[in-house]
Amino acid sequence: MATFHRFHQLCSQLIEVSEKICVLRPVEETLTPEEKNGADDPIGDRAGSNHPVGARFAERRRSGTTDLEALEMALRTAMHHAGAVALIGLLKAGEPSANRRGVPCRCGRRARYVELRSKLVSTAVGQVRLTRPYYLCSHCHTGQFPADVEWDIDNTEFSPAVRRTQALVGQEPPSITVAGRCGYWLGWR
Ligand SMILES: [Zn+2]
Image (cartoon, rainbow, N blue to C red; front, side):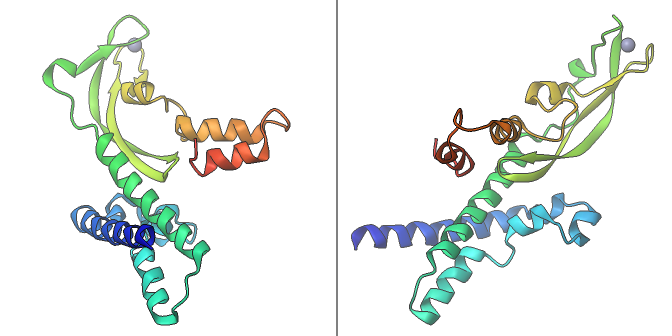
């Protein structure tokens, strides 16, 4: 009973934190118009603007029963949303400082900073729009995103964790067990 009480407390705290995060920085701000309008809106689904965890508790109060699957999926959605917001914040690359306005180009010259550009990346916590500096070499006209190389998302829209999952799914049992794959997707490891 004490454990359940503690769990309920933690869930309430999670809802509070989630609501504060939503007020401070709604994920909807990161959506493109297509994503806002699209039916297949992964960020919108995950954002849970109706606070799905709170809705589960409201339902439990009304009915007196607990739909565990709905509750655990709502909790996971809330955690993904919080994770996506944190990821966007942590990977937010602004305008480069004066000593980072130029980077080496593969032709031997230097590529100069042009502007900030964004792209949608599929991550373990859902799709997030990342913004980073774009550089262009005026000699060979090759563009580059040094941040993409640092984050290991150069020329791909899938994060390293998502690519690892894709590789696991592509492997045939028995090298990777069903339990192992489930555990990876659910983040047990
Ligand atoms: Zn060049």
